[in-house]
Amino acid sequence: MAGKVAIVTGASSGIGLGLTKTLVERGYSVVGTSRGATKSGALSASSRLALVDGDVGEASTARRVVDAALSRFGRVDLLVNNAGTFISKPFTDYTAEDYATLLSTNVAGFFHMTQAVLKQMVGQESGHVVNIGTSLARQPMAGVPGALAILTKGGIEAATRALAIEYAPHGVRVNTVAAGAIDTPMHTPDKHGFLETMSPANRVGTVPEVVDAVLYLDSAGFVSGEILHVDGGAHAGKW
Image 1 (spheres, rainbow, N blue to C red):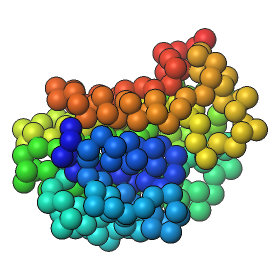
Image 2: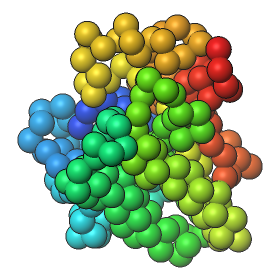
Image 3: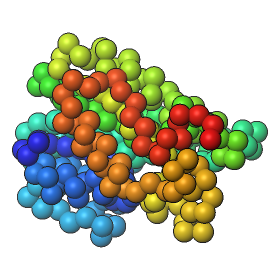
Image 4: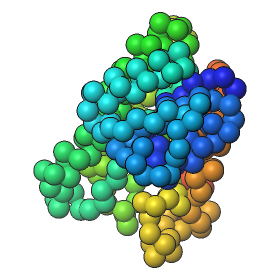
């Protein structure tokens, strides 16, 4: 996998940060983007890491990120749509602001970035898109109301299968990692006790475990349209 070029959204914290660092360590050249990619201090630009600030919900960000990848590294082999948000509340309590936030980051971000990258990958006749989703799209839980957020992530799972079929003739694969509760800054330590109950494994997942799933998918050249669950078995049903 050394020599590949990757784009990672939401790169300055959590799963995106862990993935960006690991990809660079594995020999990839990476463009990492987030609202504060150059200001957070989590990452430092280098000969194999370019940083681009921007909101993934805006089409202009996708254009600037792809332009950076092409000008610096000449191609795009992997896109990881990691940037996302999850707002949990009873359905009737969601506000118009919640709706706009979820659609902007989870749906518009996926649309703009994936569309821009696919145009490049079709020209290359190769490439791979990995989306980071949630296992709640397959197995909702009574204690975690989040239907509006799940609507956005479930739609991306459906799009994963559709795009895998549409772009297979062009040598492009599309997959999703459906994550359970993962130990990231999104979850404060006082919530970990509850989060552990969200998996039959009775623990919270780790960032490296999600990173391993992405690396597996990127190395598995005959796997496309797959929803790979990293949730300790939570998606399998009631326990």
